[in-house]
Image (cartoon, rainbow, N blue to C red; front, side, top):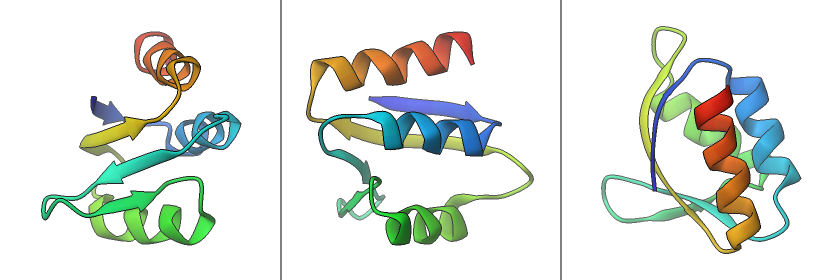
Length: 77
């Protein structure tokens, strides 16, 4: 799923941390980073964070419940 315009990065990672299954960030090169790993969270932030907002990410979540959580975050903030 494409996730766009994340302005509350702390809340975004709280949602990621609350997910039951694997949640991965797909890089432009096709690599997958496990976003449940704090190290991967910091690396991904350093690489894509600019101007206080993350413009667009491709995220893969393994569990339907986790996809619903991420969708709810994107819709409701």
